[in-house]
Image (tube, rainbow, N blue to C red; front, side, top):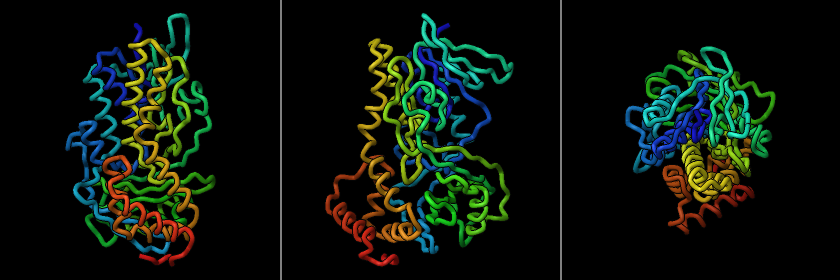
Length: 393
């Protein structure tokens, strides 16, 4: 049996690609490594909910406020106007997406990817079956690599796939308390404090009956578990029951090339599509899975391998400017506690709040308020050149 496409990876990117291809009438299989839950705050914007038809039952919390906390413990509460940020638990959300892909007609295999072999009939995915522990092949015409930040497919097949920069994220899922002075089940807390993370941030994100508490860093030698324990103490959550603990790399820069020029295209973390500064990945993973499926379908129809390049082209056409803006923000403000303090001060600005969340909710830079953009640019420059004090609000 030969598939049209085999997808390596069953997370949001891989499951989305598999579902889209199956609904397009393609013979598709996806390989999932069972038992892995990615550490993730679990935030999804309204655009994801609408674009990918996510049912209410998957939304475990509806967040109406984001709190930014500075190194000196000053906080800025940013209301989420005209909507909410949905929260999902990856343990259940990812499985929902995999089941939906199989319901659409994709075949699911459980095991560990080993390698790609090729002969005169085309490529085959070789994997180790979870139950039998035997090596098995999946013959195919095309391959979508959606196997995470340290993608084995990307490392073996795509230039730069073995050198992509990343941060390590770690979180603990805890049993959530009732609302307290430090915890609000309708508020996401983002902690910009070098004592928690010297180059990224910490978070407390409600998940209904549970909550995600964690941090990320790209600096070697940081004790992620110790930092998370200190964050729990600072948030008054140290006595809450711990349900599970998870850690994994998260890429922060899209690869320059997403395909190997013949039969492989990447999607999701494997392609590096996690937003700089915010670390947001679920929406971009699913968008990446969709454009990878679009590129694979185009290649299958035309027979032109260059159509695999469509995945990156389509993604970057829509999201490149957002990624550039977020990268500039991270490079400017995440380098020291003094800069983080200024960043939180900047978040007091109503224009910053509105434009930031409009861009987050809709996944595009807001162009309809040129005066607001000009004002923000001037204020941003004033902070970076220290023309205003850190306590500016």
